Length: 230
Image (cartoon, rainbow, N blue to C red; front, side, top):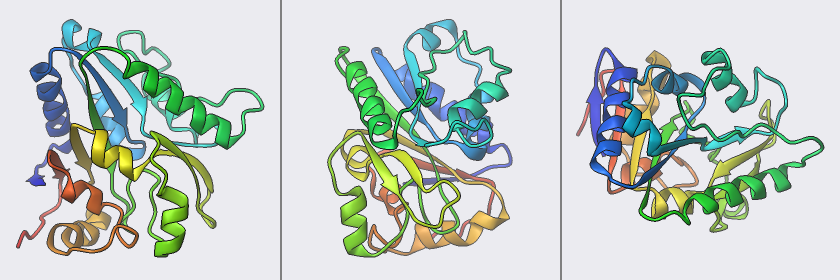
């Protein structure tokens, strides 16, 4: 995992995204993180050619119809609802759709894209102060296996105590085995402690799910914090 400290993290992350899209001649499916990582997408300045070859989709989504909770609806708000220049796949909930059906639908949508020839996957991931990434949270080893052990594109996740307990998230297996490149995006002083731990410590995945990023063969961590390496 490459660590990049910069005063312009969203621009640097956008540069990596565009470079990886440009190096690949087929379709790129880019999974997006919510929260502050949406700044990367808002600030993108991609050529028309790159836009034609790139599809964006949320890598984790809250099972909520509230605009302030659903990541896709927050993305639309950033663009003032005008996303016609980009190919965004909606992860808005369908009427009366339960979370398990929601996760299955997102998996089917992604798998249909993989039917296209020569598809690469870029995944943008945030990192929480507790070491979680996407909606993959630390928990006991047994509970982690029950929640995240299935080999699927998206999983229905349930973490008691969260404001949004039910979510659809990319699985650890998908991130590990089917993602070509990872852009980890973590900014702010509140992330410094966990980033230092991620870079300098080795912990089991159930204790620090963001270890998925460090273990990946092509991952870059972009932050505005001073991280001690080694």
